[in-house]
Image 1 (cartoon, rainbow, N blue to C red):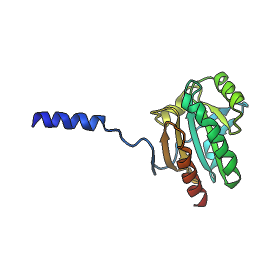
Image 2 (image 1 turned 120 degrees about the horizontal axis):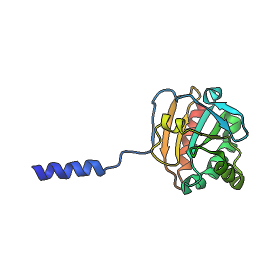
Image 3 (image 1 turned 45 degrees about the vertical axis):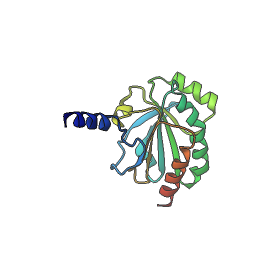
Image 4 (image 1 turned 90 degrees about the horizontal axis):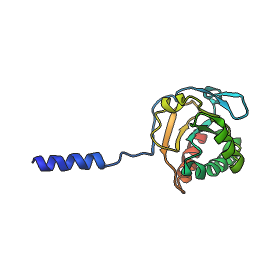
Length: 163
């Protein structure tokens, strides 16, 4: 019996919890961060829009791979009341500026200079994406990125735009 319980404990510990799921955890924590152009942006100013918040870092390969995908999504649905916010978690703007210059993304890039917002949102992976409905409620959380993940983003964004 002891061996069975040990094996069961190992199995439970090694079984991954779903990293990406539709959720309804209440309102997203508000924040104000500086954009790369030097202006401040407050999350609550975007109420009434569907917002995809993407936490990323320049050293993260999947983050850099995901940025053009997010930019296409931003451009495609922006007129329908959707926006993407990129939050660089490295604490300084130089690396973020370099990646933006290279990738040509058009959505706002904010810098979490003191990593307070990263902690507030309890980041567990890079990149991490949170999608908010028009009321500012968290409706979807996605950790990591691999090609094809954008199909789930499109599905969620279209659903929330129609609500």
